[in-house]
Length: 282
Image (tube, rainbow, N blue to C red; front, side, top):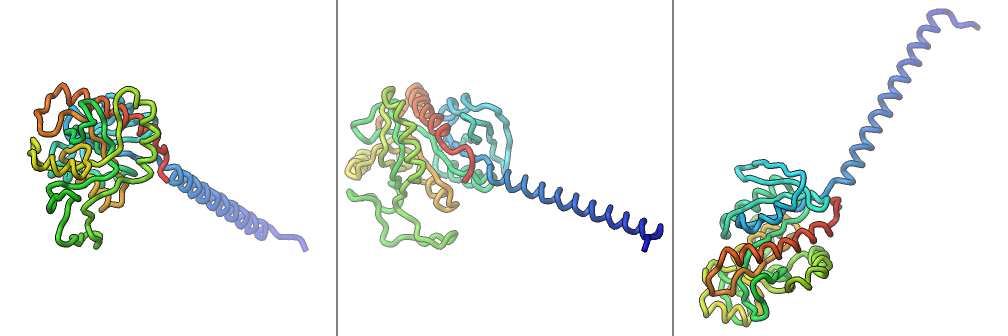
């Protein structure tokens, strides 16, 4: 039986509607696939914290595609190092400054790893000005009681944020340590790079009694800010790593020229390390 004109019009309308629906479906599928692909290849972001401007100069000079921004009152410089997305911040010296800036950075940017790069005093007799210590183990020498066998408290403190016992001693992220050990190979002939124990203390200069206990604990270097960064990494479940450049012998005066030399050495390693990290978030 032949179709009449009205039937043909209805059929055409149905066909057009079906085609439009199909096009919209394919378009939505395409957008979804693009979003999945983009999320799967999201670039990793690495945060570098420098307590003082002199400790961040080399890093910032090596950054490309630089952009300044301010969030929650903190000034940042974003850019790239060896193709990796990085964010640099000058925090100010001391535990309060570093803790405040690091916590705001973690909240604002959610980086894939946080790196502290600061100058320090040598505790080990094997270190001299310009050498670099990468912290595998860190503790706060002023928290609780420092004994010849390590820091101690009568009981470990419950952290109300994650409901876990706060460590007295922190171990660095094993993956980051494995990467930086490879990064250090080609720089070891320029200056000494060791992997060891870092302690924090607010004493400046460090008194003789404290240095005696630190040496009994086989501490390599001492500064102020390693544990705050490591503890915040622990709280925010973000991998962290602490670099110390030897700018003085613990207990002795600090010179700006020695800090500049040591910071440049350390940040050569930091730049190489950044370039050896994954370019995409996993």
